[in-house]
Length: 276
Image 1 (cartoon, rainbow, N blue to C red):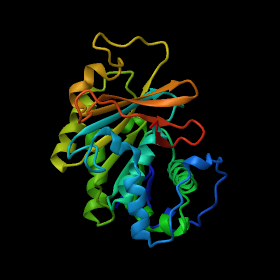
Image 2: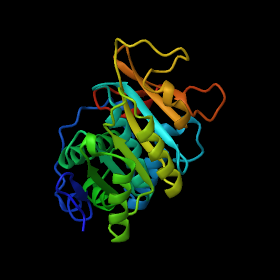
Image 3: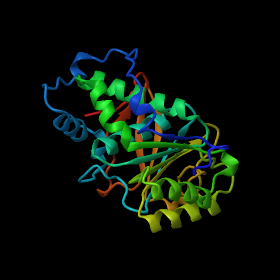
């Protein structure tokens, strides 16, 4: 049996999947950015959303930014949009038929679920998605939420919980997200063990990394939280507020030599879009 005394686990097959969709208060999008989709079945609707994923501009041929066993990082100051960006990456994977394990070290299950509903609701506004409740019901079983106390989180603890849900046939992930891991202290040991686990299981892992305004970069130009750990990460992106928008800058992992994706995060909706 799963031990949930200290931590929460949400099996979305049994929880969020049955929740009634509540329309969200969504900010109006400029008419020029609205994409009117024709009525079509959910399979085609998912395909439409996948091919419009702006992260494809990172130079990847498909939606998989990370390969098996690879690490990716989203860096930004607190409140700039790290979680919103990771939720969009997760939703794109879910739309592609892949299972996402979302691990939160700083928010309860209910708040994480709200993140997904809000981001999907705003995507539906931007792309004029019909039948949003039906779309939600088809993708939410592909997400599983776990929460841990920061001080109790480790690779062995994660493997124990993961083995439980997989052996019982509850959930088997294709992608892991870890939101809230502190990087202001030495985490090389924790990350090293997670890297071994990720490679052994063939699972990519995304992390959020909080930076601070007053900190100067390391000698190599990378944020000081990432610099000593850079060999563990294949992909890294930083969110930089610039003149009313949030630019997404690739630090590592761009597949085209010298490329820089023209992507921004809209601070009003927290959705990714292209500057082109």
